[in-house]
Length: 339
Image (cartoon, rainbow, N blue to C red; front, side, top):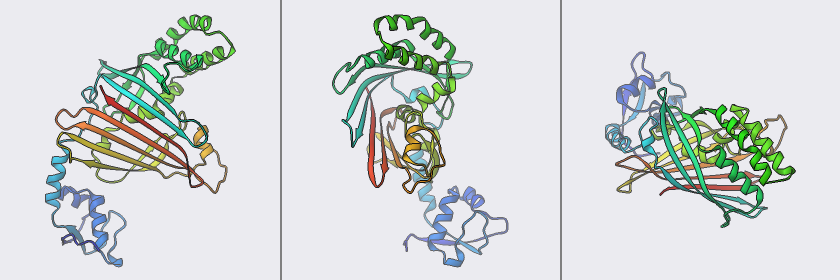
């Protein structure tokens, strides 16, 4: 049993963990968890309503609250701000597969921001792609980069919570692509080129689908964290994507913060999938009712390194692992560093 000092609080009529936590400035979940650590079986409380005469409360909560307050002051702002970002980051993506050759992609990411009708617009450019040490491995990768050059900057409307809401001026982007498509077809000849460009044009015609193609990527999940992640002290239930253009999966999510470095605050967000789907469902992005004895197991870890004084993002890392039949099926990592 823990040895932390505590006192017995006499429960009054109308008391709940929420009302007591509000008075003491303690998280109600933490109050209940601490009480249950010391309570006898008959005193354990599972819900907010209190049907016990006393609850056990940690003695040094005031000291903890002061420490937490100082810690919170070092964290990024609780509302989205362009000041959180640098103009340029170097990005490295590493795809590891047990049955295939590893793939490493490096590129430069540039960010610009603008305001329109009291909304924040973020503009993203991706430049200088290098795949496994080569600038262009195939004609298809060259064509992909040519399409990016036409479509970018990609522009999105961002909420105050840090979430991507919609594509900005999507109709203009579709017309822009149509106008320059013929030049691409003339240079990159062949049926594969036509099929590839048809796919992009169809995707551009569907705003929701096009938006999902980006928000489901690791880059966007890492680059646009919910601001609430930096302020939660208890476990969260969040939804994350584990495969490109798939569906989001509910995860048990915990946040841990380190202030040991004199200048840098480290925040680690760990998400473990709790919903039961087959690996095939997740990778294909289609929910089925197929029964399986081996459910998908996935874990995401997002780390943010921010300047304590300026509260801007210096570096961020995302690692994703997918397990199947008690073996790692896929491992992926993404790192972005301020330049």
